[in-house]
Amino acid sequence: MEFERMLELHGQQHLLKYIHSETEKRELAAQLAAVDWEMLARFRNTEGEARGEISPVFGLRRAEIERRRKEYEAIGAEAVRAGKVAAVLLAGGQGTRLGSDAPKGTYDIGLTHSVTIFARLMENLADTVRRCGAYVPLFIMTSEKNDAATRAFFEKHDHFGYPASFVRFFVQEMAPCVDLEGRLLLEAPGRLALSPNGNGGWYSSLKRAHADGDFPGIEWYNVFGVDNVLQRIADPVFVGATIASGCRSGAKVVCKARPDEKVGVLCLENGRPSVIEYYELTEEMANLRDANGGLAYGCGVILNYLFNARMLEEIASARIPVHVVRKKIPHLAEDGTPVRPQTENGYKFETLILDMVKLAGSCLPFEVEREREFAPIKNLTGIDSVESARELLKRNGVKL
Ligand code: UTP
Image 1 (spheres, rainbow, N blue to C red):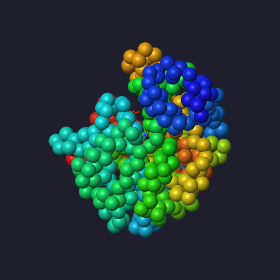
Image 2: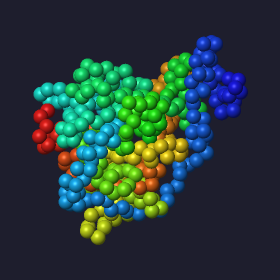
Image 3: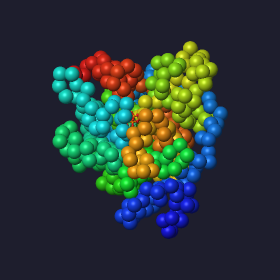
Image 4: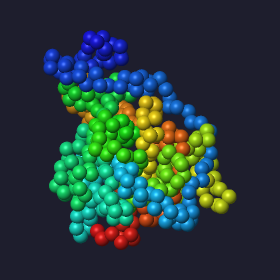
């Protein structure tokens, strides 16, 4: 389609003012061809999708897991040995809260020697390898912004002792940023302002990159975030329990520490498993108690999920909801000068992995002990910080 006509069709004629040469026009046209216009249109036309009827869910509790640990571990370890379990590290985020431009996983939390987040995660994965007696394929999702630096870091550290033949990197897609009126922003002449499209697109990005091509037998993907330095990866007990449950997905959960703790909560929405964000819980729901005196909406998700591969294929074409986030977005002004806004000036678009639980249709909530498996690093100090994670690591016998 003719360039001007396309801009008009999508209400983006303002971009014409930024074009000063044929080269810039060509570059921009190429990027605009990749824009998900339907997503932008949905952002304009919806106020966010309404939630269905929410009710609490009761998961597989620790006492029951302990009782059946051996049985679950045997099922999970067998699946690992058969090459049916892969791990997916979501490392495409920008980690802005840590205040560093480097990939978040390269952040060093050591005190007397170097202990990077990536090193810790690889140590946790090695633990599974020791327990099961087999390597687990590891897929690492990066973004255009941090891909080269992440790969270089793994190379430099010899993949932390893991065989490189079991590690694959893939890059997630980018989404365009818009101003508060929905107009696309530029970050440089001829270049759209883009941001990683959220962690919900991991499966389509992995497939597009054919990252799993060498591992045809995968039946389960254990997907986890970069921040939790205590998490178990491809944990055979979790894998075994999920397989035994017959569910198409599983979610590691912790009992929420307080009614207002800022974690997503696994619950039922119109009778189907779903994760709702902490800010979607009313105060009454957040404080509601169950028959045992625990929090009724107490299953806090920790971004460690298991997804069945066949189910992922089935839902691949389903539309995952788009979340719109207000942010400060550096961009070019109309006269071509760069602007670094002090207040939020536009929107980024993200899809979230937690929405995949709802699409999966069934999910096993699998309770873990937070002191042993949950040490997220979001901030430098305070709650969920470098400081709190160091404390938890020390309590688990990790030397820093
Ligand atoms: P967060 O929501 O904590 O975002 O990501 P973030 O970008 O890492 O950190 P802040 O908010 O800028 O400080 C949760 C997990 O999802 C991954 C992150 O790398 C992290 O493991 N993620 C997030 C992606 O892989 N891609 C994205 O686009 C966003």
